[in-house]
Length: 192
Image 1: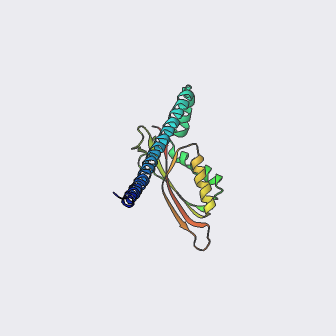
Image 2: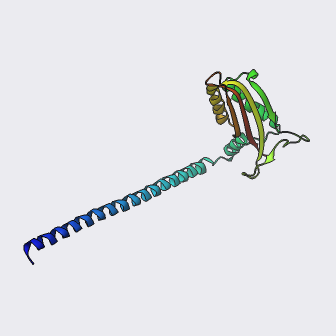
Image 3: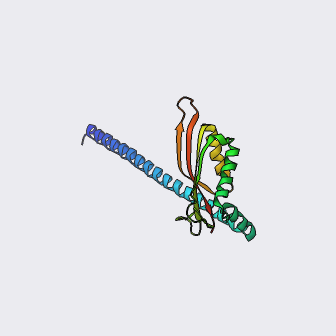
């Protein structure tokens, strides 16, 4: 074998070695990134589980006074049997907080119908056992977007649990930033 041929073979071996090394580094980098993503997800899951455990510990430690717990449940899920008064109070408080005048309220409807009784207008919740749902609607006119956001904030900060099933917004095309009609289908919850 002559020196020139030996040199060419060595150059070829070096090129193959460099290409193989680069390929190996690229493959190892991909593997490290995949493992890092997997570890990151596992750490996030661990942190979420730790948060849940801490919250359960706090709840366990703070629930030592059953009277306080019962008072909290009674606030969130009242046993009040006059649902129309309960909803009227919710609407009055929220609209007053959002500074909505009575002439801007076009309609309020409750679902009570049939023979009046302690749970008139309620339906048994499909999601939470032993809790009744009381739906109601409110329609408003000529309010600003800021007022709508304040109203939503007032519902959210209310001591009662209130959920929105449907929100219909009709913007006022003549006045940007204003709403000509707002219709809210809401529900609150009561204990039997």
